[in-house]
Length: 203
Image (cartoon, rainbow, N blue to C red; front, side, top):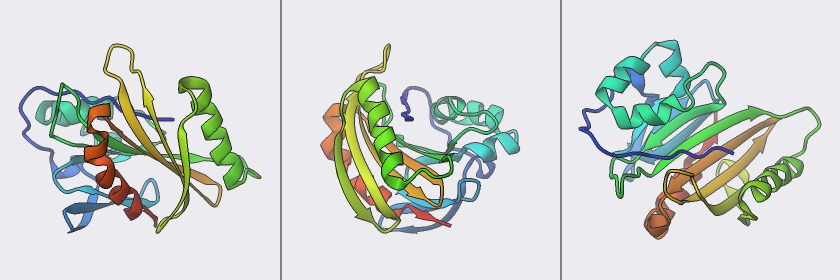
């Protein structure tokens, strides 16, 4: 289960085209991105900064990103390794209390024979063991049947964060959408997180 801790500070000079996943359009204040290496598309608010982990690695753009956008680079570096299951990272530049609200998409191949129900249950069990039982809600989204989870997590040296996750499972592959913010901003971002999750679709 993947969460991201955001940090603030510094000047924001933006990212270059090679740092970003392919943006395919904008609508209703949301920018749509195609992440071919993960086999999906997703939208996040158009002012959020986004990166494709595989693209960063393949094009050797991480050093340039560190210089141009340290906050986004800090997020990306947590997963910038070959074969990382995290394929997409997005960061809200509106930093509060030295924390940046963020989103990421995790993609994993699931052993043959595992069903959607088993995959969902295994993720809930892992979360429960690590952080306590999350709130659960089965939801039907345009991208398919999903399980919505919400919980809070202590991050050690960082602040406690509020997390909303959407689990998807299709044809032996699991997809985990994770949205993380500060607890006192949960209501502020609730609609944004839901709107983003509703745009998730497989290629």
